[in-house]
Image 1 (spheres, helix red, strand yellow):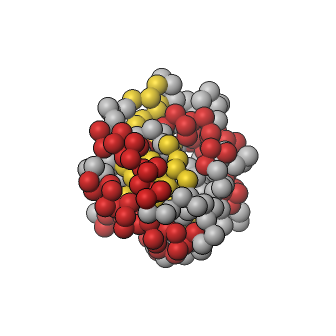
Image 2 (cartoon, rainbow, N blue to C red; image 1 turned 90 degrees about the horizontal axis):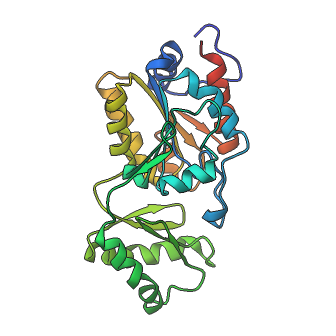
Image 3 (spheres, one colour; image 1 turned 45 degrees about the horizontal axis):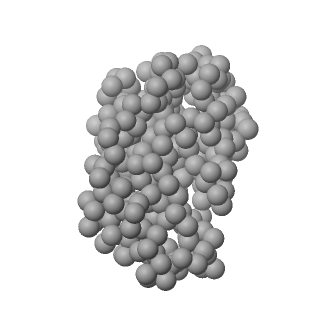
Length: 281
C-alpha cells in the first residue's frame, strides 16, 4: 500500500486487505456503508438519548467528498437517524443517504426528503396488542417498548438479568409477530418486531447496484448487520472487493468472527474513517 498512514489499521484477512486496497485505489467507485447505533453512536440505555459520536460528523464530512457515496443503514426510522446523527445540512454530506427501517425508508441529503411505503398493517395490530401481551406473560418488570414507527422493539437491557429476559421473550414474541405477518429481529438486549422482506443485506445490495459501486466498506456492531456482512461476502465471492468492519462488542461474537477489522466502538470507528479519508487521494 506504500504510503498508507500508520494510523490506518490493517485488516487481518487477505480479503479485507484487498478491500482496503480497492477503497484507496478507486475511492470514487466505492461506497462506505455504516450502521448507526453502536457504530456511529454509542449504545445507551435509552435509545432516544443516542447521538452520533462527536467525531462522527467531522470524519464523515472529510470522507464523503472523496468516495462515491456514504450510506447509513439502520433499523431506526430514517428521519430519526438523520436527527440523532446531525446529518441534515452538514458540510460535505450533500449526497449522504440514510436507509432507515432496514431500507424500507430512504432519506437523501440532496433533497432532504424521506421516501417510505405505507405502514404494514401487522405493525398497528402488534402496537395495540403488545403492552397487554407482555403483561399477560409477566414480562413487564424492567422491559420496555420502543416505538419505531414502522416497527416496535422490546428492550431487556434494564431487567435484572437482560440475557435471561431476552431468551424468555424470544419465542413468545416470535409467535406474536408471526400471527400478524411480522418477523422478529434480535439485537443487543432487544427484540424488534418488523415487516418481513427487508434487511440490511437487501438494502445494501440494492443501493450498491443503484450506484454501480466497485468496492464497499461496511461497518456494524449487531446481529442485524450479519445480513449486510453476507451481502459483502457474496460480492467478494463474485470478485468484487469489500471490507467488513466490526464496531467491537463481546455481546456479538458472531459479527467479530466474520470481520476483517475489529474496532472497539464508535470512537475507534470515527478515527478509522478519518484516517481512511486522509489516506485517499
